Amino acid sequence: DTGVSQDPRHKITKRGQNVTFRCDPISEHNRLYWYRQTLGQGPEFLTYFQNEAQLEKSRLLSDRFSAERPKGSFSTLEIQRTEQGDSAMYLCASSLYPGARSAQFFGPGTRLTVL
Amino acid sequence: DQQVKQNSPSLSVQEGRISILNCDYTNSMFDYFLWYKKYPAEGPTFLISISSIKDKNEDGRFTVFLNKSAKHLSLHIVPSQPGDSAVYFCAAGSSGSARQLTFGSGTQLTVLP
Image (cartoon, rainbow over all chains, first blue to last red; front, top):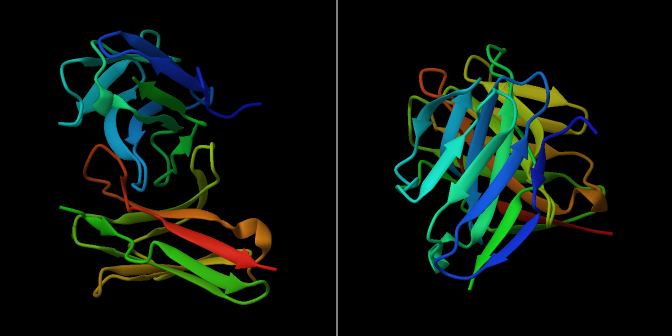
């Protein structure tokens, strides 16, 4: 399977705990994106990397959120001191840049439930 | 401030007929548009895209039309099949930005056998 993979697929945690998600992009893709999706809404952009550099962060990404892509391959998204409002589907996508306006390809997502 | 809007939360069509999903946008900087399909418990799957230099792009049963003056795009599926039943998201991007995509809220398409 050469698609985008995410781990875990589901995470249930208690408020105040820290959680970390992993994303493995399509191997030749140099751009990696994180999105968040809540019920009834489309995905909302959080942040993106080109290779190992984090180039943009949305205002949705509070200081409790941190993302890394240390070697320009896989990425991790950590949420510290989780809140109930963090409950959502966290989606990772990757793309190849430059490309002729290449599409972003999404993983299956990690569903986070904060109790 | 929703920059990409899908005003129909749901659409039902009969198998074999045409499905037309609509999307409106407000940001004139958008120059690249995509449609994604999403099944429950899966991530969005890329379907088809169109650049602002075109007004139509076709791929098999899927055709996307872009009307820049109206800031409107539509996805046509002909003929519709039961397996097309899913949530369809319209997304827009700008080559001048970070290439992040802005998504609409989705339309649930149900194709009735």
